[in-house]
Image 1 (cartoon, rainbow, N blue to C red):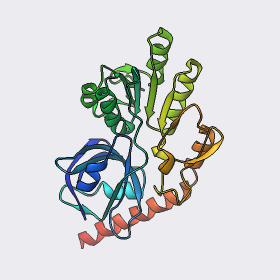
Image 2 (image 1 turned 90 degrees about the horizontal axis):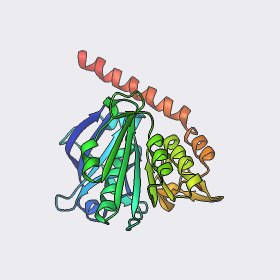
Image 3 (image 1 turned 180 degrees about the horizontal axis):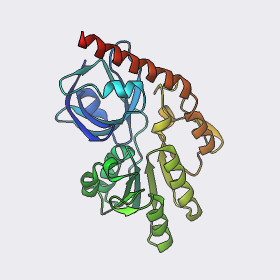
Length: 284
């Protein structure tokens, strides 16, 4: 069993757990993920490593309530335990002294981007971070990102914080300015990563995207994270999650994300019914 030592609500429907997992903490690297199960009957879900403390023996994960399992997970608190916490899985992000790197984070993807930006900064890169969300209320870890960046740009779709607009706008401005940029890294919703890659492609700047949003099983067995990269079939969980964003078939990826929509909806409805039954039982 793996104990949740700390929990925090970062934004509406966005939660942080620090989980006691010494063996995972010893091996975890930026860009990798873990597979967890809440209980013996629980679904296995992948969550990207947002941070780790090797001395404390803990791993931090940040998740958004999007389906039955993440909504169930959000009902837990510090002191509770989960049955499975396996990892680290996936290939770690490639960290080197590239020069100037633009790190793009969208929504909950900022949590996965943070250890990558930190590792790049430690490797003596100049790190320009651009993070965005729909509104101010959905932003989190602004100061954490600032601490690992030489420059931080914050955007919101509605202009409630930072500059109004989407993350690709300041990226294009930097590319047009002639400011030497050696690499772009984008982590966030698939549609956001697609447009980051489309923005940088005309400039020929290597762009790495993290395809965490498409992963399901986490071991390559289910085939749900199958993607086409440069015309070849790859699996996000075992061959990635990082890939060349200019080579990803984004239309295929976005279509694959919709594969299990019906089943996901049914699972959520059953979970909601279960919660209602528990509430009714408690009133008796």
